[in-house]
Amino acid sequence: MTIWYSGRVQGVGFRITTCRAAAGYEVTGMVRNLPDGRVELVAEGSREELEAFRQGVRDAGLGGFIRSEQVRWAEATGEYRGFEIGRW
Image (tube, rainbow, N blue to C red; front, side):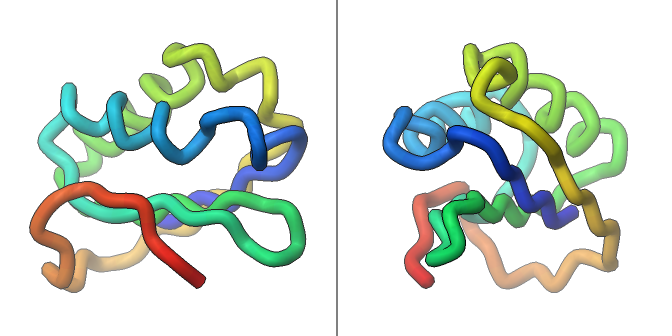
């Protein structure tokens, strides 16, 4: 699952809060700031766990910063071993 978040999502602790939230789910992946002001989240796991994690990000205090989410589903690549803050 890849989500592109827009809104006031940079400079508010979005990435670190997302990483902390990920620890409560069986997901791997990364979250990073994009040059256009959005945040990109890439996560792999079961569909059920990913949906729960997606809601968990909002519930971790980030929902008020998110104006919109663009979600894309794809097959897992297996390239992630944990959940981390990525670079662009």
